Length: 38
Image 1: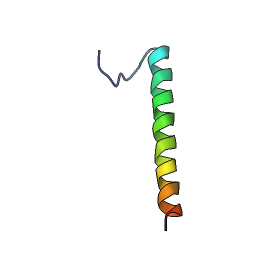
Image 2: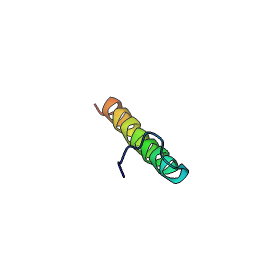
Image 3: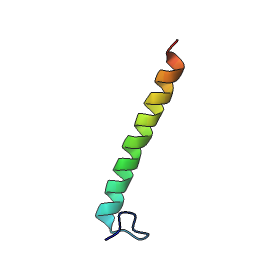
């Protein structure tokens, strides 16, 4: 079973969404920290 299934079942899609959201939050925090740091 491939990791990035073009048509994943509902559980995997939700997991991918949660993982994507966590990754996005981490990137945003990193960008804010880069801007805030002198």
